[in-house]
Image 1 (tube, rainbow, N blue to C red):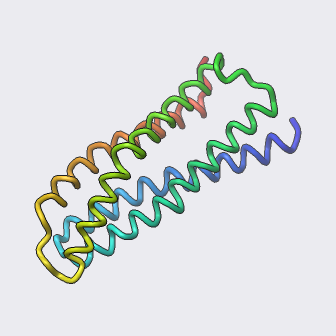
Image 2 (cartoon, helix red, strand yellow):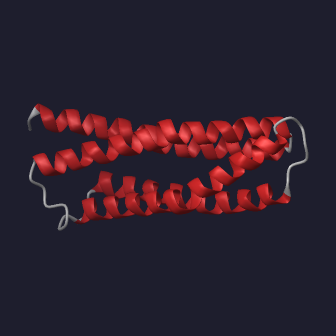
Length: 157
């Protein structure tokens, strides 16, 4: 095994840690902030959700994808016919689709709403309705890459 494999694997694992760590912790902190029902705390948390998703979720996901594909391509692994890689990639992509088309638009709408109540004004009902959708789809988008970790670790064929 050459050093490029180990370096790319290390970058891949760091990407997994950043990606999964952020989506799990972000979900926790946003949920806890919402439970306070305090407009200033919620507005602050909503800004941080957007910022940390951009830095850590997207950054970690990009690192994870680039290093994983880099290893597969540079070591001539047939990822279309290697079941554990196919499942891992498929679950990761499905999670990304949920983030791109459902969660990020919800977060953008919630961030805009949060600006309107950041100084203590009443939180509109739309914020809470969007929050329920964010929890449901966020849980799904978190579960999918966690299942991908299983496939990647156990390498079932």
